[in-house]
Image (cartoon, rainbow, N blue to C red; front, side, top):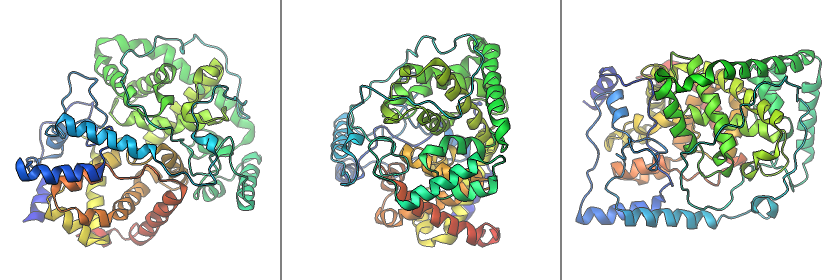
Length: 502
């Protein structure tokens, strides 16, 4: 009966929402699983919470009934449907506990103390080796800052590059012989007259050294040609083309038929990595606003969808690191020249566009790509770990309730940004990395928490665990193990789809 109900869940149709889709299930700040779990158990003795909401009859009904991922009270038109029953006292206690836990981060002895210091006062700026002179167009980087800002809690500084030796910038420990050999291999490939992209992908799969990551990502995404002599002209042409779009289309954001799109972008940008100071700077938010608006109006089949704003951030950080030696997450971008910022903006736009070209069905009307991937994940997990699958069924947890965000945001809200950057090294090296291989990464990620999942014995405890997984301390080692397991699953199941179909 349960299996039949599951099938009906995917076949039913309902009134479709508009082109702007919500993102579901997260909370900010993240709840401490231990504190919240104890609270629920204690409160259930007196005033029991409902075991689960009314089961959604369709994907779209679920979408309408689920709150936005980063909504923390800055939009008067949106509701908080998740965790309304938690009183303010418990919410404050949870937030305080989370901040206290974060403030006691353990630092490995070999980490440089400077990496955890406050924002540097004198940030060093380096000149990019791939910088091209762009003809100047009207200044688009001096618009008024976004007025809609959020009051955010204070937090300890957690560098984007913590625990990843080949990403550390200042004060990094000396590279090992193996790391130096890898870096030299990359430099030889990138400096050749015609870069061997197959060999570059093979070298990039286990991670790309920070020093060569910007140009490597441009090549792997298809933004730059393999021919060395064509790269400078290509960069110049594509950057000029992007700012031509700005001149042609950006003023149309004030037109009535673009108001809904622009308003949603304007709301979402301050929510993008809200605890990282870099993304709360007005100049950075203006850049993101332009990138997202231009992409949306050039892709009317999907338009802007919440979650796309997250996909800009890894590209922006990587291309910014090409010019900055200091801690990127605390860097003041006003120290960079306008020409450099324009180059970073244009490159981020084009590389994000290349990524979305491969997964656009995730964001088109009714988001069919996400529905298919969530269903495939459910079938795959049922074969990989039947005990976990049956545990979800026992407590009536739908995969859509947690995996929608995993597919919509490519696990970006489950992992620290430093981990996402490392993950994307491999995604760009894999054929259909952001679509096909991502399915196996999600399956490996889910099974990674099987013990914690099986320990939870109620619907709400399971959802709170899956929406607040403790990955804040993850780094290169954990991502490497996750990718290795995902590759093993792909090797076993990708060429034999009937192995995971019932």
